[in-house]
Length: 210
Ligand SMILES: NC(=O)c1ccc[n+]([C@@H]2O[C@H](COP(=O)([O-])OP(=O)(O)OC[C@H]3O[C@@H](n4cnc5c(N)ncnc54)[C@H](OP(=O)(O)O)[C@@H]3O)[C@@H](O)[C@H]2O)c1
Image (cartoon, rainbow, N blue to C red):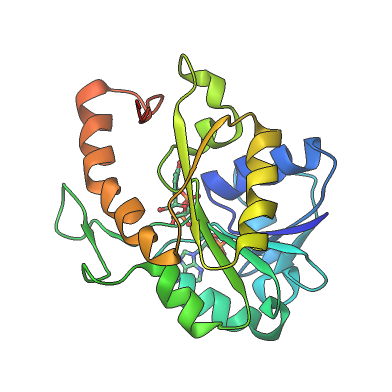
């Protein structure tokens, strides 16, 4: 499958090669490819395109951009999002007033829903935003089967994302239903940040015990 990963931070740099290792045809999106390629330590060989071009022809688009910039970036992508599955892994975090971070979205909304409203012809699925990027692509970093979630209004789009999660090694995938469940998934982040400072590691996750 052709996958466009929008974002060249830790998440984009981790997800893109993982999808390529699974045999997908992966393109990364960034503001300015020349600037990104010139970054210290940039060693990804995958194609790097401006955000405006990266999603052309992609079946799945991943939003792995800074949550405060995501709506702007996706507006630049525009028509290429029509009909596409849009996997949103971003978090709308605001660290400007220190820790814990606050969310840039009100309690009765989420970044994922804002994206879906801005791009009604895309099919947004929220997933993977609740774990560190290393765990996203290797859930065995924590012991036992921990839990990852999907939320979205389009069942076929969620099935595409669930297949990808399975290929990455996720076995306990909980479908929370409609995209409005992304509110809770994003609200977990202030607690996630607190756990990270208390535990001193990013290798932890929720396991929902039934
Ligand atoms: N780090 C994790 O393990 C983790 C885990 C779960 C969820 N998340 C979420 O995943 C997303 C990506 O996180 P990250 O740590 O990889 O990187 P990040 O620093 O949050 O985001 C980097 C990306 O955002 C773009 N960006 C930043 N400011 C921009 C602006 N003003 N206009 C346009 N684009 C802008 C950058 O563009 P350039 O490519 O041009 O630099 C880059 O591609 C975030 O929403 C984060 O909350 C992160």
